[in-house]
View 1 (cartoon, rainbow, N blue to C red):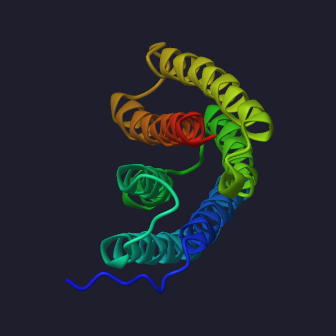
View 2: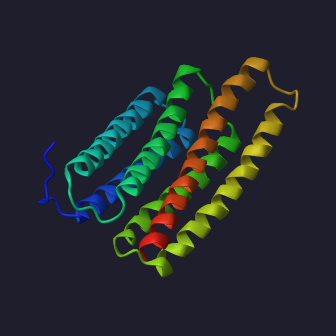
Length: 207
């Protein structure tokens, strides 16, 4: 495979910003689905379309990585960040799909709380990507600290949600369906903490 020096190194940062923008917008669509639970088929399709767009961005990053001689940071770090963002988007898409697949009548209040935290984390991640090109530790450190705080908040909501599910007040089948949604929401938030950890590692290495 021929390596190209013509690619601008900054293109990677542009694509990361595009990836996080798409993730934030997809999470907003999920929030709308859960808070205004109607036209579920249509809203799930919109989220699925966004997931496909995210795949295209990830593929573009990998293609540039495989054909570029010069990269703005370690190749492994670029790959890890791209795939970590893609994993979060996959989890968000899975949540939307589960509402449809399981025929869930209405989201639980705890799911709404989880999505609120997830969206705040997605917004923080999008903002952080604007500062990544300069590896500005002073601007980026509050980001990964805040993501850790949000992840802890999400953990609390998750634990309370699971405890509520197994309180004995719900049918076993409903518990199984709801638990899968709650777990995927938790996975998405954990994924954003992983993204923050990768960003922290990149910045500390390159600052």
